[in-house]
Amino acid sequence: MKVIQGGNQLSLIRDTEEVLKFLEFVGKKSILDEHAIHCRLTACHNLFSVVNEEEDHLDYILGNLDLLINRFRNKSKSVNEATLKVYKSRVKSSLEDYKAWSNDPFAWERKLNEKKASTQGQRRSKKVVKVSKSVEIQVEEPEIEAPTQVPAPEVKVLTHSSRKVSFPIRPDFNVEIIIPEGGLTIKELNRLGMFLYPYCNDVEMPASIWTHLTH
Image 1 (cartoon, rainbow, N blue to C red):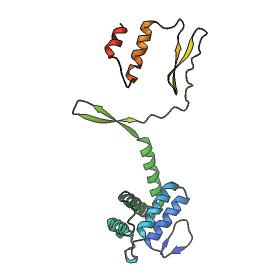
Image 2: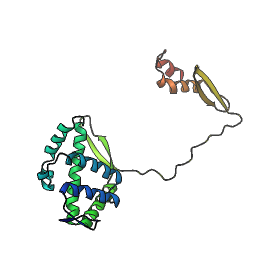
Image 3: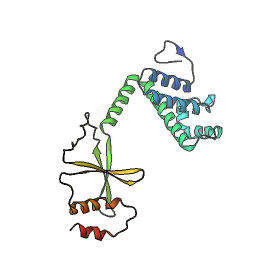
């Protein structure tokens, strides 16, 4: 005879049924995320469907998850291995959480919250630093939060002597450029060509010609 927290009645039920009721309870009370609860319930329902009545004990199930996974694999051949691996992990977490919650619900919830806070506070982005050709190290950097306010983009106002020109390089595409006051010099024109040179996909003249023209 066991009491299901959140209810008023004593229940003679199987361990697997208690685990399902536990998940529904912590989901209803928002102790665990609703999506996580849905995923865990799906995994538990699937694996519990291949548990025999005499096997319906927490310790037995925890110790024989691979056996249950194999039974479910034979029963549902369309389920891939990645999904089975996820099911095993979610069922294991559900059973372990239920055992800890049964021993001390408040201690289990406090530990759960502490784990969440610790995970959020220690999130790091990994950066690979190349020390030499054959040696690389990984360092962790604090995650940089996005600014709450996004600065307004810089807006350049054309003066009366500046000029915006559009050149149709293709039938369906124009290149636009703002010509400064007084126009361009030959050297500036050549520098502009060198700036655009890396974007060419069918170079017709050697780069040395452009280099010569800019000096």
